[in-house]
Image 1 (cartoon, rainbow, N blue to C red):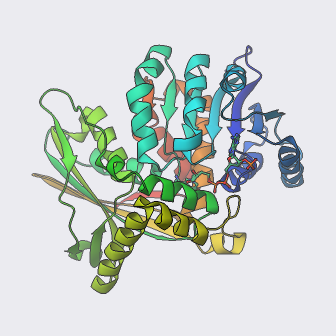
Image 2 (cartoon, rainbow, N blue to C red; image 1 turned 135 degrees about the vertical axis):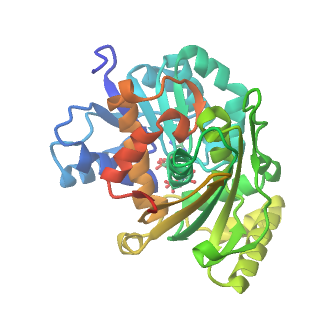
Image 3 (spheres, rainbow, N blue to C red; image 1 turned 180 degrees about the vertical axis):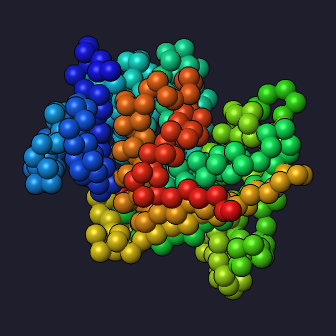
Length: 389
Ligand SMILES: NC(=O)c1ccc[n+]([C@@H]2O[C@H](COP(=O)([O-])OP(=O)(O)OC[C@H]3O[C@@H](n4cnc5c(N)ncnc54)[C@H](OP(=O)(O)O)[C@@H]3O)[C@@H](O)[C@H]2O)c1
């Protein structure tokens, strides 16, 4: 039901950026006559007006109802905006630099929040400093609603649903993806890698009698995928483990391993060396400067033709003492086409599915905030979640 006290159901912050524009386009194409009241927001009115003009060319009937100028470091203005909407979706990154005030404003205003951060340090800071306040305010702060980490978190949840919930579970996810990065993603990744400790993850409290942890991180040959798994140190395994700690259905003892998939052991070695080199460069000022010089400019990203060739697949192999399962999640261009769909659907779900969502508040993962509700929305948008027969 519309909240008549608020001007909007949804505000999209960062609409002038590369990913934000794609989210705005997705909403314009998909909203149709839903009646959802929405606004685009950013720090520059002229750029926002240009975005609104482009959206009108897609569908004059579903263009945003409002255009809001706000800087993400102006806490009073942000809080005022947050009070006028039910949900804020933000693509303003790097989040560790630009994200915290938006979260604090949402909690102060009783407004739900979604983002597409892949930066572990940012999420850990929110868990430490804002989780309790979000719980008290009954607000959902849901991070990582893009390729980081929706397919991994919701795919792992689907795999767990296939296994007995009273047995220990071991689950491994193997990711392959084809796509290019935007300047914003590059910048955020370099800044995230500079903070090496953040990948250790927060302390997980799975409750009495339950254990949640990582599987050994080593390169391995995996006959079931006819290839090799290379440990992938992204935010995704941290998200899956947080979901497992929060949800008793993941069983009394849950262990997860997250890997890049490759068919060639030489490529596997090269991947480890490449990730290690970039991580080492990101630790020191001159190395970081070199990486920033190699990155595309912020605001730029892969063109439509490149995105049309993008795709991803995540295969989950799960076992418990009495059962096993295989789940596949597949979609198109992971970083932008599918990420923009994922964020748009997550934001709409907070508005449109309120009564069907788990009754939970705080700093949440997609599995704990949405569970199967978001999975079904994404299936309807062509991102497939399949359980092997
Ligand atoms: N999870 C995933 O899978 C995934 C996928 C894609 C992207 N991402 C993340 O999404 C973020 C955005 O990426 P992108 O490529 O879209 O970046 P981008 O093109 O650089 O866009 C950044 C946006 O933030 C806005 N912004 C910057 N500072 C601001 C401020 N002080 N106040 C208000 N707005 C401000 C920019 O506004 P102006 O236009 O005025 O400069 C722009 O709209 C990155 O952190 C990236 O890592 C995650």
